Length: 308
Image 1 (cartoon, helix red, strand yellow):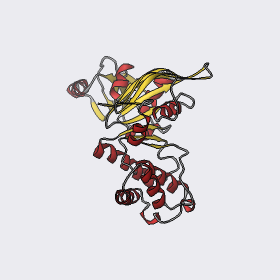
Image 2 (cartoon, helix red, strand yellow):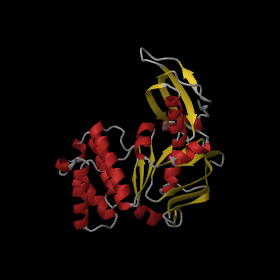
Image 3 (tube, one colour):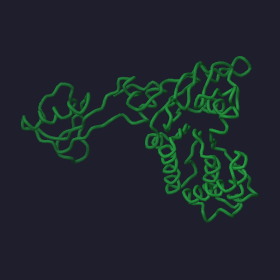
Image 4 (cartoon, helix red, strand yellow):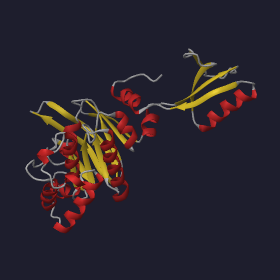
């Protein structure tokens, strides 16, 4: 079953400004999805509609089969949300905040305490459980807000820039927790971020949006194939025989040999190229296969950059 399904979703303001224009996409259960686009592209509007904060002007959307308008209460029970500006009660301790929000979700106190202990430990906040949030650093506040979003073990988690403001170690802990949750509980993570390298490292699926329109949705290979993007092989060597499609590039620094680049279809072609070079007396000092990065793919979709 798809965790999220969006069909011809529209959102207009004042009957004129179209924030979303007939968008369609689906998200497989258990996926970690990067919802990517520039500022003002419609990301926040989409997330608010999926969370039941905004009503769509037209179209339909479903979270785990629940209609976002008709079944909004059920969706709130199934979902967790952490926005970039998320906050909690500063005059309560971390434990008191988790207890409060756990009760809001109808959880038993015994279960809340057990879940709180686990989350605080995994987010490196165990020693701060009895401190008031107003004493927390920016990074600690970010992590307690994530713990609050996770307290009821949601099946779908909406995140907005989950690692912004965190140091590398805590960003790593947050990333591990998100991955573990998706794997252990088959939970789905729907994440908005401008950090494309981070999205490339953690996400299993991507959806590109710009000016209220979906430009592409799927895993990396599906999105690359749709734009006819191929991998390249880069070879540094000498006496390289003439092979159809090979381009000789300018040498870099004092490295021995020349550098050649060629588009390839897959593993079989890579193997054949190396075999031809060796059989014809060529010398290979370095060979590596390069694929398009998520950043390059993003700009191909969003900005229309050309493939080189």
